[in-house]
Amino acid sequence: MHPLPLFFFLLLTSFCIIQVSSQTYRPLAAIYKDPHTSLYIITIFTNNPYRANLEDNNYFVIDINAPFSWDLCLYDFDPYRRPIACTSQDCNRGRTYLSPLCQSNNTLAEGQCYCNVTATNPVTNMCASSRLTYKVLITPWTTNGDHVSGHIRFDDVCISCAPHSFLDSFPVSALASFSWSPLSLTTQLTPSDLGLARMFAICLPGDSKRNGVLFFGDGPYYLMHFPADIRSILSYTPLIRRDNISVEYYIGVKKILIQGDPLKLKDGTFKFDTSGNGGVMLSTVVPYTVLRSDIYHVFLKKFSKATHGYPKVDKIHPFDLCFNTTQLGPTLVGLPFPRVDLALSNGTRWAMFGANSMKKMRKGSVACLAFVDGGMTAKQAVVIGAHQLENNFLQFDLVSSRLGFSSSLLTHRTNCGNFNFTSDAPTDPWG
Image (tube, rainbow, N blue to C red):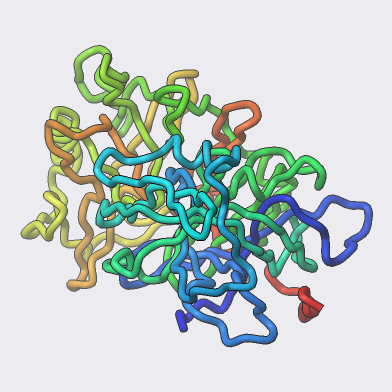
């Protein structure tokens, strides 16, 4: 069993197991960073958690850009799962995201037409035809933004099966989608009959020692050691879609600055081209920010110049610029390296300090610039990777199509590991 000491949240058309006062309680997930893969994991109960041994398929990797969730179908008969008919609206939604690399025809069996979709492993980019199903899922915790409370059960949640081959390079046997897609958990866990807005907030932990947090719905959101609702420190920028059916999250970027000095790049460097390539995408499965080569080489040269006099050491894959940090004392926001800013399209700025711009290596007192070269044919101009998102509070508002971002919470003397998960012991939600 995976060493996750936590619990998850989950899905759609539902009924509440516990009545928790008139105040709105929303599904909540604790986030664990896998130390071996640096992927972020949440707990979702996919069978009776109180009367069966927990198995790896209760743990889901977070992917904010996947069209739907998937897990490993372990048994031919699963009392909590049933197939989706190929004539259903949910099937039509799922088949919007078929990959041309994987044939995925619907299946006829025993006189029934079952819905097949294309599931993808975002680490290996492997895809496979898989059956779309309805499943019972349960959130072990809910929250009012400050502390946790009882359970919510969701029936008929759309989730795809996945083959055993997907487990290569994957720390667990399931994936949870939080994209624009109508089949994502973003939508399925925020039904209007529970009074929830179609949005979620995510706060990725900086290491595997403390749990981050994922909220469904609007705030308030509270973290220990910060006296107010976290929304009070958020800046906002529009969330962009590449086209009407794309499910990934993009933001508009005008410039990248190092220590306040902008990179000298061509006009339109960060925009989409006529083929839909380009743009600046957010990702929770890409470990470090990826820059297309024309951006990366300018960025690397400028950062190297800004760190003139810092003791450099041999580079360590996949990074190209590494330093001896023995003489560099820590600061509130990480190692004292030049600040990196994203100047966004609406005039706001996303600041990245040493904790997010640098990666401390296991090999002695060494830190490397945590940005990598994506090559000239990279599909996106920039992919903002998970390391750059750690200890940043991000609210994805799909109703208003905007991203709320805090920049580093370390500047406010708190972090993503400071949500209060203490609660009375949960009762059996399957009762």
